[in-house]
Image (cartoon, rainbow, N blue to C red):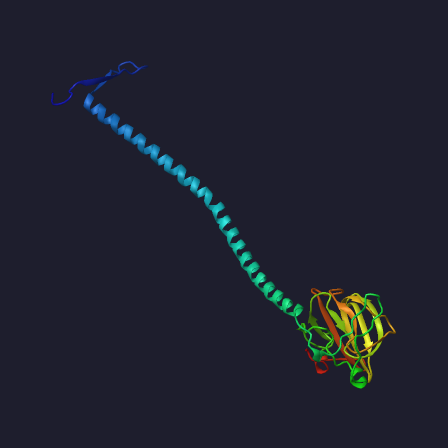
Amino acid sequence: MAGDERRMTFVVVPHGGEGLGTRSFEISYRRLRVVAALLALAAVILVVIAATWLFLAAQAARVPGLEAQIAQLEGEREQVAELAESLARLERQYEQVRTLVGADEGPERGSIWLPPAGGRIRSDGGPADSLRASLPSAWPLTQQGFVTREHLGRVPGQHPGIDIAVPEGAYVRTAGSGVVVEAGEDEIYGKYVRVRHRDGYESMYAHASQLFVASGDRVERHEVIALSGNTGTSTAPHLHFEILKDGEPIDPRTMVQAP
């Protein structure tokens, strides 16, 4: 056979009205199969479209969350960069501290006065020249340290001395011989010592962790009077060192030099 010529007849019988005749439709089996195939294809297309729409809708719903995650990751990346910079800065400071801790004391620095285990201070040697020794002209530490803040005493209310960064527990020694006029603790300077020298000079040593002298004690040049620390208003271990002339602060660098 050239094709399936069988036909199917559909009869439509109306209800509820007189004078309405029946109607009939004929369709071949071949055409019916074509229509069925088209309907099936249309159903498949609809299913694919629906699945695609659901997938795209799910992806679109994830976009705000992904954007938030990207923003969070960007913020964390910036924090990591800041931490890396801080770490590098701390490493540089650590190397500086290591250099300070390992600094050798040369013989040209003069004899150093150390506190004995018993309590009272005695010296391993005396000053060579009493006149020179009575002026605050010696470096106030047994190690070099490095100056982190300069003297700004000429500006009212500004920094009246210099800050010298050293590890906590470094020996603080007198810049010149004299008499301790104050030794105590202050809210700003922490534990401090003030020494009166000749010709109207005074020197002050602040932020100490421990004091070895009291008011009225006689001290000699290079005598260890305290240990450096971080007391009072301070953010890191250092020595705050001042020199005053007739009650007015002067730049300590005009009197002392780092070894």
